Length: 485
Image 1 (spheres, rainbow, N blue to C red):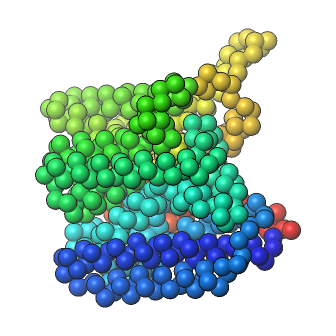
Image 2: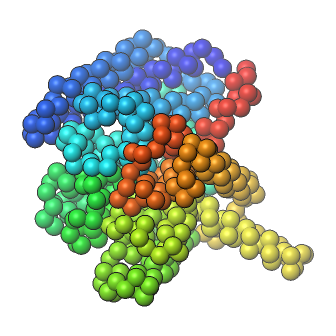
């Protein structure tokens, strides 16, 4: 690795910090409008972040090319760490939390669009901080790397290297997103269009514009932060269904959404396997949970359908918005929600988890192996969208599944060593690694992670980063071979 590569990384980090400082400056709007007493503090945070970013960019402005492909992995990891570090400033400077550990946890949860929080009563927070929490999820949910890809031709960074550094494994449906900057910008336009559309829809439905903006930011990004202490339970049923629609669309591959919105049916027909499996999971899971709520917990059908539909979509898309204290539900329903969070939405979406494409490939690979047991001489290729899946992709999916499972098991063990009971350790590990947010016990439902020890909060933050970068990008940095010339 050359020294010039590190300078180029610092240059680009400076550009991203300037962008973050600009977004931080937008939080002055509610600070002034609601007179929450944080105007000066937010202004200081924004100016400081802008100044540091400008200094880094100016100091290394002549370093453009990044020649070593390994730098893509380092750049992606540093992007999330650096933006999370400066995202702690509004929490600390406004006095929302005096602890850097808790501020780091909240910032990492926001930037990685996890949704786990250490604030049990978020309504007590200043409006500027509430907007900042929502904004971190909004730009983190779309993916910082996609913003990198939009700028990469001018920075001399290989687009595909950056894409695979954040999203390892199979994503046939979204491969066009790494071929041209035009496609990335189209994806961003879909994200912006959905944000504007659902903000207006919630506003028209009777929600205050302030709440509509914040809830749209956090649900369209599969984040789950809220401006209410009871998540979205206190909004009207119509507004809950609208937010469920935002979650549902956020779990769809954004390249596929662009094709749907532009009515390019011929291209869509050959990319339907993942979408069909995604919708099938939702239908079957909703039916199961609705029946549990009606027959086992005695909810009437309308209430069971509303709660079951919204909570199931929230779990599968790893959004984490809550309409009911699911910790009071029957244990099989809670277990199914955790399994859906592990599965996650479609590849190329804002969701976390394993992604339904990988789950589908694993299932079809298992079916192919079982068929070969019965008929050893028959060739049974694994197919996706009517085409054989290469052995390279199948191997990648299997490795990611194994690594994900191992990290999940180690995560549960480490949290138990931190003094967390077994139930909460399992819930927190799943919630943080998948990006779902809510865990089990006191950290599930309408609860928070405020009672976790500092060591547990730091480890959960690490799990969030691992889950957002799909494990491999972070793990590869710890290999000695990575740092050799």
